[in-house]
Structures are given as C-alpha cells and as structure tokens.
Length: 253
Length: 261
Image (cartoon, rainbow over all chains, first blue to last red; front, side, top):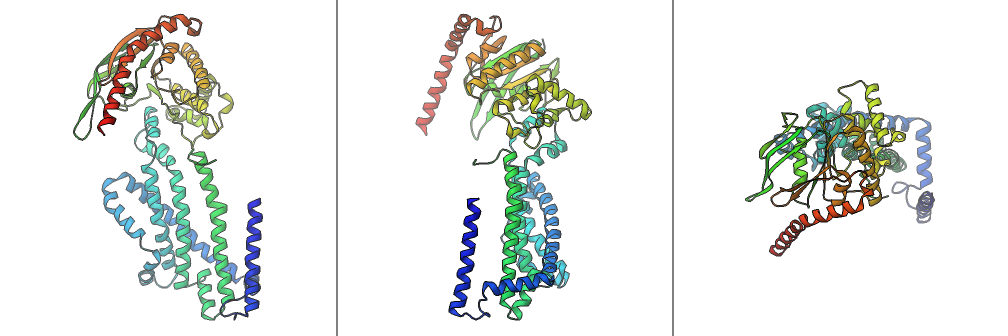
C-alpha cells in the first residue's frame, strides 16, 4: 500500500504544479488548459454520454481487431514453428512487416475498404497479429524437450502430443504475445481513428483539435493513458504473473 | 529372460569426429528384478536407459522386452526422469491420469490415480498445482504417474539426483516399499554407489569412453540393508575400487581437453 500512497502523492503534486503553472504564467487555454478546465470538459463529455459512446465504439473495434489478431497470430505462429519452409519464407516476411508500423498501411486500407470502420479494424489486426505470431512461434519452439520426452513415454504422439502437451506448454509465451498485441493494437487503434473516421476516442480528439478545443484533446489523451494502464496492470500483468507462477517460470520471489 | 539387451552399440557423430557412447552392451534382466546401472558421468548409462525407453535409437544391436523388439516409446515402459517433468497446467491428479485418459473412463482413471497417489503418500494433494509441491513431492507424483499405467518395466534416470539428502533417503525407503509391494522390474540409473547398494538386487557397473559393462554384481545382502552396515561397506569398497580407475580416466581426459583449449 506504500506504493499506492506514493503514487497518489506524486500525481496530486503533478496536477497542483500544472494548475499553478498555468494560472501564474497565464498561459492561453489554446496552448495549455488548466487541469480544472480539463476535468470540467471531461465531466461534461461523460454526462452527455458522448465520451461513453466514444469509448464503447473504440473498444468494440479493439475487441474485434484483437480477437481476429489472436486467432490469426496463434495459427500463424504454430505454422512457423512447425514448418521449416514456412518459417524460412513467411517467417522472414513476418519479421520484415513487424518493423513497419501498422499505421502506414492506412492509406492503402482506405483505398481497399473505404473511409470506415473496416479500414481501422484492419490496421488494428495488422498491428497486433505480427507480435502475437512471433511470440507464439517462440513459445512452441521453446517447449522443454523433457515434457515431450515424458509425454512420449506415456504413449502420446502426433496431434495428441501437440494439443495436450506442446500447446499448453507454450501458453506463457502466448500470454506475453497477447499482452504485447494489446499494446500494439491500442496504439494502432488511436492512430487509425485520428487519421480516419469515428465515432471513437481518436476521432473525437481529432475533431476537438480542429476546433481548437485543447481541453478536450488533453482530456482524451488522459482517458487513453488511463485505459491503457488499467487494462495492462489490472488485467494482463495479473494474468501473466499467474501463468508464469503456475508454469514455474517466475524468476524472482 | 524378460528384458534382453543384445550387442547394443551407440555412436554420436559430431562435425568430424565419432564418439562411441555404448560399446557392445549385453544384459539380461529377469522379471521383478531391481537392477541399478552404476557408472561415472559420461559412461552412457542415461543413453542406455533412453534406448530402452525407445526415446533414442541404437546404432547397432537390439532390445527385446518379452520377445518384442523395442523401436519406439510405449506405455509398457514407464519412465521417471531426474526432473519430475510434471505438466504445470494440470493438477496433481490430472498429471497422474495423463497416460490413462485414452484407455479408461474418467472415473476409473481417477480411481487408479488415487490408488497410486496413496502409494506415494500424496492422497491429500490430489487437487494441488504442481508448483505448490516440493521437489521430493513432485518426484513422488512422477513415480505415481509412471506406475499408474502399469508398465512392465519402470525406468528411472537418476530420479533422486536433484533432491537434498534427507528427502533422498526418505524416497529410497518409499521406493523400496513400492517395489516390494508391486514387484515391478526396475532399471535404475545412478552415479551413487550407496544408493545402488541400498536399493537393488543387482548392480551393473559401467566403465566410460566407450561405455562398457565392467562388472555385473548380485547384491545378496538381506533387506533392509541398513541393518547390515559391514556387508554394505565391503561392497561399497569393492565397487569404489572398480570405478576409481574409470573416474581417473575421466578426470585425465577432461584436464587434457582443458589444456588443449
């Protein structure tokens, strides 16, 4: 709980400092609004439900995109781990594509799908799939040979060996892959929404920026950060820690 | 005879050198016998066990179990490794049921699993996760898992090598009890002389580079052997004498290797 108290004090000081700086230096709200203005704007946005709709719209795309990315990524990762030729050809392409930020696909995605949800979802899928693929491939390749040998002495082989031993043994890597996939997907989603269309948090941010409403821009930035942190800490880190502990892979304590 | 090992050879090929790990191994093992395979590290004793398990292919020779040639792993040979190799995504009971799930109904498999978990005194831990157990407990689950498929032979590859002294000694006692109860044929690989004397009917002493059978010793000391310390010490000294030259050989080779690199 020490930790929580330190965090509360830190963020309180940060907000007070920000408020004081804006008020004392009389910064124009078009450059930097004060925290109180941002809070007021957020309260307004949530009470007339526009921000709630935005959050829900963004989450809907994220869920569809990440869901598809998990299915494709896991499948592709297994293929690369199991098939040498696929690994040497397709695997190299996956690595190459991984170094291209998914948002650069947006222009072509808009040409293919139109300026709509589909283009953004495509960017989200692309952003998350590759990192999930790479982790899944590593997970399958790094399964302890001891598990495989033990399973073989118990009469397991072929598909049964894969489904009952190799795949479950690779779960820790898959979880890490999905956690990274979520982070990539979240960034890709925001970039996609800013550059394309709404509703959604990114789109509303762009809209507010076009009207010089910096209170809203910063408000949405805060929402994006808070959601990202909450999902990562409260969900993914917990799941990852539990899996690592159970699989006996935890390094400290 | 029950388990025949005939003219077994095993070579490993590196880039440009061939190393002979096992050379002309011949062994005949009777049903119900507790046989230790004893030797210094690098004598190929684990490779020999792995070939019996069907996990490694021999370069020449063959192994017959009840007249059947061994070519691949099978449930007639249960194996216990140095690490417990339990599956962490399954609880204790499901681990023991793993080899049974195809040949019997779930309720029946659970009953069998509980029977063997009781034998290794872990009845109270059926629903525990693997990571909640100590190393010794994990190894006991591994033994229960291997026994649950009712194998003809139980293969044990330094099963207590990674445990602390007290735990090891308790497990020796438990294994002896299990063996007296089930009369399974056990092939037990170890580098500990006292462990082999404490447990087995027969000790196959192996020499190193290439791995050969130095001597095949029948242990005629009545059980429990702790009651006959003099006979045990005498046998220990005899085996120590056999192995001393082998250990010297390994040390010399390793020093020569270190000097050349």
